[in-house]
Length: 441
Image 1 (cartoon, rainbow, N blue to C red):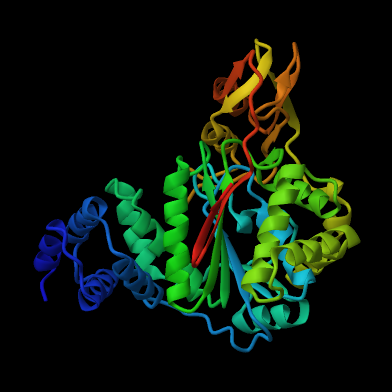
Image 2 (tube, rainbow, N blue to C red):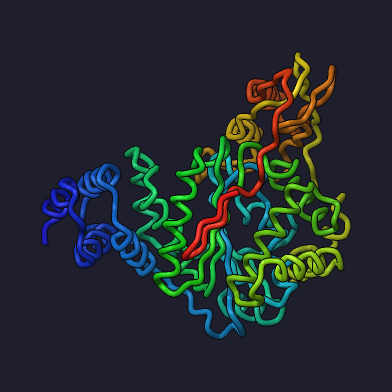
């Protein structure tokens, strides 16, 4: 078998065999196939696409390139969730405790943030002492005892995906739905969960800007998951504005805690209820979405979700007193109120720019080696459809560097489009994608 022939075959629009895909993944991972040949193949895939069968096999080949977690010693059906990334997306910190409180085990490996989107692991490290690197036996014990554990991905999880993604990033081949789907699903499958719920973002703050593209990506991932025996459901949610109010690690943790106290932003609360409910469906805890929602809402109102967050923090070495006393968290001392020189309705937001403003403050990473500042961020007071009156604050900046605060302020001001015509508020959830059905809203 020759790499030249595989490149030529895909260039001419033909379907690659399982053996050819395996040859590429194994050869590139071990270093026998050079970057320039895999780059050529990625560009051919970018233009000629992949079939569902090709995408599924690529996913499994990448999942099999490193560690595969065996979670069979965890009692019951294990469920995981994944978000495709967004601005202010702290849903895991709310959803995972609620699902665990319902009795469904959540054994989750999460990632760190890169670019304008935040990472769950970074947020959890806002809790002093929180250990994101439990050994495997402790991880299993925690899930069996508390129904929840959240840890960082192991170094040898899907090494093929790490190499291929790095190459896609520098060869302008990132935005191909098959390559995105296989990258995401390979990590989820290798992480060992029985069921997976995906939150696929769409809009100005998401990778997928158009609803049809987001639904196609969601459907591709749902089909892959179900084909390999993982009960998979996707929610497509709106990211044309930040989720909730807080953007930035510690600020988002505080907002998640408030949400579990039934004092959080309504958009965040409603999305978390929906994701958690579909996790119960995927985990076969109930057969109807109405019953699933009622179970989740009951755990939210009773405070059992908050108790489960406290257990999670304490069981992984964190200071659980911060859950009850969030004022103990360290927040950046410099506050800057951002006001616009116009009045009217917020017609549109460049949500990605809002995320980049937070990244400039230090809340995100420009490269995977960047150091982040957990204390900085933004509070977004005015969102799409809201009326801005004269001298009203649209965003409060929390920062530790005056120059960075000024840069962030300029970006935030430019990110708002204001009109004198009232703007219709779009639905937060745009579609539900299941194995045999796509329901648009």
